[in-house]
Length: 321
Image 1 (cartoon, one colour):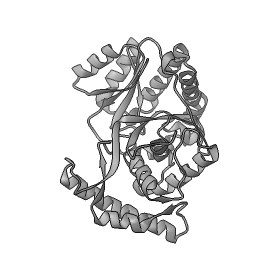
Image 2 (tube, helix red, strand yellow):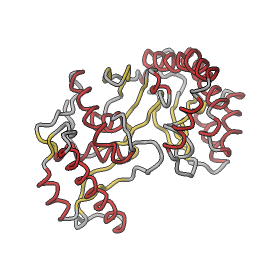
Image 3 (tube, helix red, strand yellow):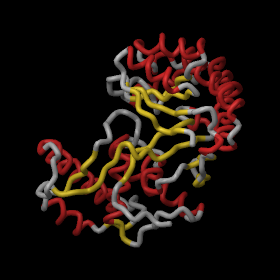
């Protein structure tokens, strides 16, 4: 089925943050709680006018960036620049409630929307899309999104564009997948907790890469952590929930001990309490440092009460049937 709407969802990387840099698997899902779509300032919308003006300016910069890529022979798709330029002059902007700096695809949704509207001979989004087209789309999006992130894998806009869960075997081996909701048993819930602060990806990724230069850290990361991540992905896709939560606990504990600077200090106590009590398990959502933290639980009421008492908003991402 092809997508019938020009509305683009955010995304949540369930597993693979940092580890996909060293060939672990990854699992990412679209997240319809946050959305964005191309619109015009003069349309009958209730968006903040200053936000719309700033978005229009950002998209003008995006247009020039794509033109510069074409001049250098690095634009891997055809874009209708004339049409986009004319629309920008009419007040085109990206109407979005996807928070920026929260790791849930704000720039990915924008890139997907621009490609969808202005791409010439574009690859259509379909649940039956071929693997070679997925790979080509990722390469296209990697170049386009690099304006916003310095260097992009292209996976975020790919997820936003296809709007299906994606299993990442490697950068060039990505497939549409599905999570068996009926097997996510015992009222299992995946949720987000708002840290109330924006995360900054670049410095944290650089810190992680510096840590990987230490042999002991590298060995522990590759021989312990990556297999646990891969096991979590395998278990959740197969519906093996007992094994899943066992591996998830190890991922959560590893991150608490070894990704300390990626976890806001105000959340470390909650992180440890969740591990000790078994009421929920926390992990990074993206690079960390702020934004959202990802949680998993089979007792959502208890998890929600815990964080509500701390005055942190909890947002469900995925619930069992």
